[in-house]
Length: 181
Ligand SMILES: Cc1cc2nc3c(=O)[nH]c(=O)nc-3n(C[C@H](O)[C@H](O)[C@H](O)COP(=O)(O)O)c2cc1C
Image (cartoon, rainbow, N blue to C red):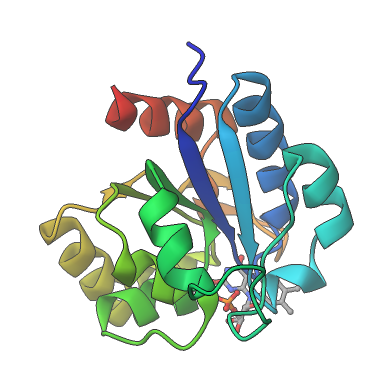
């Protein structure tokens, strides 16, 4: 399915699974979506803006306070332009922020300011994922209509197989497209 004219904002956060987001950006771009990447400060420890800019064909956004080319604030104009916001991978940190009203960076502000559907693909260590606070945050976000894909059982950064591995990128793209129909 191609989606010319639809803008997907992909938020990439500070997980070892961030490299998988390059594959997601690549698929969405080939499917003719307009792909805009928001990379958190910690996300940029794992993948470079240059890689994501080259794959997406758009400027990679990280800083809410960078002076915009236009008069309007970057977080609200981005939020208005979105057909869908996808956060992949999503850290325990960003899930916690979104569930608890914290918007202290570009990605969290865009999520709060958009009316577009939000898809979240968590990735983290299984003890973090199973923590009651993380589980409570996920339940709260599901309750307000955010869609979750994974995590799944797989090889984690710590070296063993457990729940917390990012979902298959094909499944993440499939869910994004389902919500855009
Ligand atoms: C090597 C390494 C791998 C990490 N992987 C994850 C991860 O997969 N999931 C997670 O929730 N946090 C992970 N973290 C911790 C996050 O990077 C940290 O919570 C950070 O503040 C997240 O910021 P962000 O959500 O704004 O991107 C990792 C940290 C390091 C140093």
